[in-house]
Image (cartoon, rainbow, N blue to C red; front, top):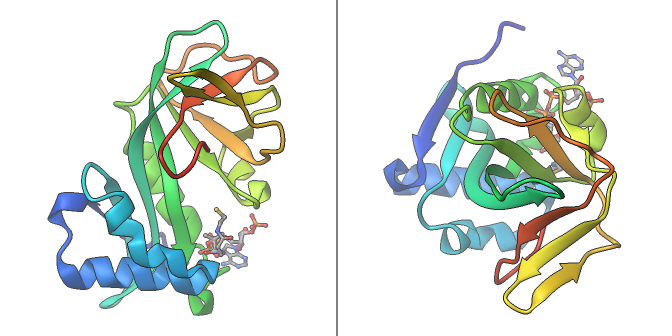
Length: 179
Ligand SMILES: CC(C)(COP(=O)(O)OP(=O)(O)OC[C@H]1O[C@@H](n2cnc3c(N)ncnc32)[C@H](O)[C@@H]1OP(=O)(O)O)[C@@H](O)C(=O)NCCC(=O)NCCS
């Protein structure tokens, strides 16, 4: 199919109907009711990538700012990708890939991109790489190792320095999650 048009909007610009549609796509795709709280967890500061079939929102991903630190590097302003979802009836038709390609083209102002997934193959095809080294959160009380965590991936951007994917990688702890 021809590449679908992807709209880009800041969280603050999303009207109530679009917020509702984003939540509905995420819940339908992930079977996870907690997406009902998406805009409570992330009320401002996000960048949203939206694919439509006519007036219907069919695929979405968002980026918010987090702070990765690969071992041996300063802390990096990181485009953290969340809420990647395509309506089940539209999956496997290229919408999710188109959303992720547009997202990757629209975050050159960040030093690196990161996400966490149980489906690394989908992202590998789009240039993302699984981090192989040790993972931890950074808290006020020090490092919180996350040895069980799998599927943390990074995308190298134009400003990303040379990386060793086997070195350690940390991210700031958030209230509700580390990765
Ligand atoms: C993962 C997800 C976001 C992908 O979105 P999508 O719109 O289905 O993505 P695409 O259609 O671009 O690609 C999906 C697969 O279909 C394939 N595909 C894309 N267009 C195709 C076409 N025209 N014909 C046949 N296959 C096609 C892709 O190669 C891809 O295969 P891969 O996963 O083996 O790499 C979506 O399936 C989803 O919401 N899943 C449920 C939630 C989830 O798992 N989220 C990701 C984890 S964070």
